[in-house]
Image 1 (tube, rainbow, N blue to C red):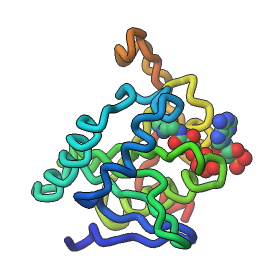
Image 2 (image 1 turned 60 degrees about the horizontal axis):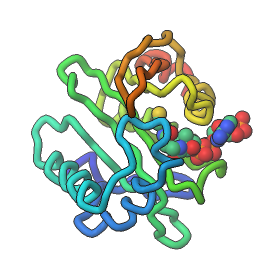
Image 3 (image 1 turned 90 degrees about the vertical axis):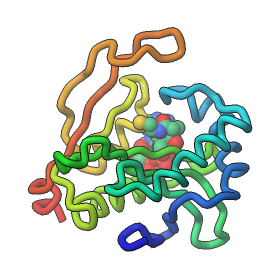
Amino acid sequence: MGIYQPILTERLILREFKEDDWNKIYSYLSDCEVQKYMIQDVASLDQTKSYAQMFLKHMHEEPRKYVRFAVLLKEDSQLIGECGINMPNVQHYEGEIVYRFAKAYWRKGYASEVVKRMLSFGFEELRLHRIEALCDVRNTASIRVLEKAGMTIEGCMREHRFVKGYWRNSVLYSMLEQEFNKGS
Ligand SMILES: CC(C)(COP(=O)(O)OP(=O)(O)OC[C@H]1O[C@@H](n2cnc3c(N)ncnc32)[C@H](O)[C@@H]1OP(=O)(O)O)[C@@H](O)C(=O)NCCC(=O)NCCS
């Protein structure tokens, strides 16, 4: 397991997906408000099981290219969302952070807490050089999270993805290793 052991933040536990997490994951993947700006549509039970299974399989890859953590509240172990890093180009020391929470837990500062820790995990533990985040230009909540985390906007990727019958414009944010070190 090595560096992929559970991570503790002030209020949260971040640990890799487990076999029986899928029903909790389903509670937010099946919510159209949560999925509104995501590339994936609302998920069925079977799609949720496959989604969770996919990350269980990724755990055995070497080098690791996709890491997903379930986000649990320290106070009652409730699974409230997920976060992680995609590293399909890990040979270039590059990763993309992702995060998503069940609606009942929005606007409590959890995304900010998680993104801060994912950046330190990416730079300090995974030794990445560049971390990106991409989101729909209309996703003001996520844009605020990335701005607050001190990431730099690089621009708008026009009609970047065909999502739910619509050409999505995406904003690209990034942070470099040296910027993280300067800020921490
Ligand atoms: C985007 C998301 C992760 C934000 O999570 P969160 O835990 O509510 O964010 P935080 O509480 O850390 O808030 C961070 C900042 O964003 C602001 N914010 C949060 N939701 C907002 C909203 N709907 N509109 C405007 N600002 C918002 C907060 O006020 C805070 O800014 P402040 O400190 O200046 O007040 C959450 O809404 C979510 O899971 N959405 C669905 C999935 C998703 O879009 N994921 C991101 C894909 S790129």
